[in-house]
Image (cartoon, rainbow, N blue to C red; front, side):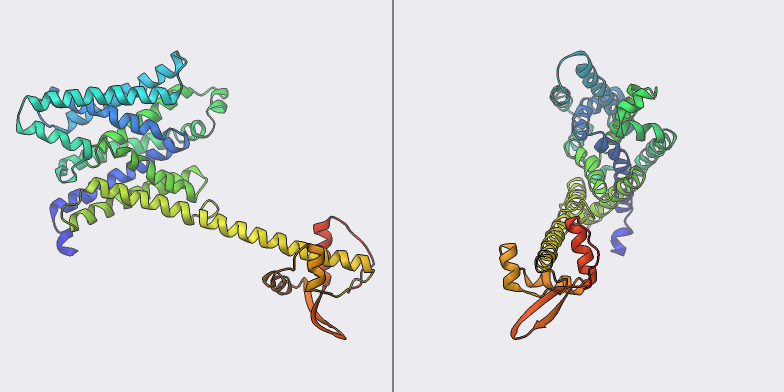
Length: 378
């Protein structure tokens, strides 16, 4: 591992992947909260014609020109989508489909034209479809870092506005905020995150790196601040681990590995996250069913005691089964005993176990049934 990390290429890819993951995670949180996950997919595909445009303008594979072109067409695609939604009767999903297909088709046509012109540099444009982490240079890190810092400053400066628009755009509009401009700024930042990730992950998979860390973070918290921080952290970890794994195993592309790790975080979060995780929900539902069953046992014992006018009435399992329709399970009886709500007693001449309510059990049963009496002497 030490020899691997000593390689300048691995160091560059590692820093680039971690930086990209952090930026994507931070900005992707807003896209997830605004329910615009598919917007990232549309904008990533719309960046392809911009990549070709930047190549043609610069006359070569200059990263600054390529990213500027991708950002231009990505922002243009977002504007076109908003115009379609506002000026026509088409819904957002239809607008996204139109923008994605038209811009991506234009990009493929432009890419085919450039490759038909020949030249060694044009061959490298195909890497923007699926990404090529090894092509990242030290100078590229400065561009990514400067862009990431600018995005962070904008998020901090407009934090309250972004937060309000992300959770309740109608309320923000009623407060007099320029919601259209704020949503436009959020969309442009999403386009920016996609643009800087094209070289590492590519057009096809970039939306996964944008959405997956945010989706995983959403499972763990319901507050925007911790969600953005956690999403950025998960994105950075996904990028760093993906870069290390792809560097240590020959033939593994970095971008897809990063996406798979980010997706693994989503799966783990869906399973074990507190309150929202499937396993947690299953355990909570099981505990709730047990509580309901235990409550039925308590109310059955209370009903028998009231019917016989004896607060210390002793009932066996068979009698409880007749009241409940089925004998209570042993774990429910044990749980009630451990909570101090019932106690096991003898009832000569019968030898089978009997149970009676304790004082706390009477109070619990009364609370469950919604009745109150006085003069109980358990």
